[in-house]
Image (tube, rainbow, N blue to C red):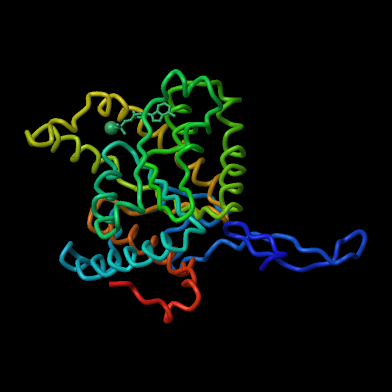
Length: 303
Ligand code: AMP
Ligand code: MG
């Protein structure tokens, strides 16, 4: 090991220098893991076509009861894989959650991460940027919250807001937000190369489902705290947001950081799809416990 270079997410390889032919060691980034479950993935290079994706999809499942066993098993497995990732202390996972208002970002976090040790997992919620954040490049505040080795971080809203609300509400000129798709892809490539696995979810609800959820926040006193008149105002821009999401998902679903469009009208099905996608991605990463100290069998614990 002494003469090889070791970086997160990469392996040292021998090769001959292309010009001089001299033997040398180079660090090659590991290929990103391929999840087993690509059904809801936006294929890189293909249009996302949100309008053709059914938010009511539930496969062969009919009710919350139907998914309970599988969801519990997936959560347990995520917990076990997270424990290994934490112990390995080598790579990390960044989960990006985006949705229309009332789309279920908070509910997904609660429903999927119940089995994960809070010490190895952190949620970062992004609101409208502060004046200090606005004084920096748009990626600055997100870069600071990227997971270090061993950790899973969840972005509840993310750098994608800078091509979503910022675009829809014309917060910067078009020439500025248009340049951000490439900036985002470069940023995510750089993260991937340094050992961060990205999993990006768009929770896909219908316009009518949003109406029902807003109405229930009005009707149920226990949900009044969640109600925001701003959500009603933003609803008027539904079509503009859908267009902005469609373009962001199309331009920024890459082989190294794919987007998943999760059917999200049924909350229980949404949780199942998110859980099994995370489970499959973590399983493909196959995190390992680090080797034990040598000669452990010779150690005795003094009385
Ligand atoms: P909530 O998630 O309901 O607490 O709302 C957060 C608010 O912050 C939403 O209205 C977002 O549109 C807004 N927001 C998040 N990120 C940005 C951003 N980069 N620029 C402007 N507004 C943002
Ligand atoms: Mg809100």
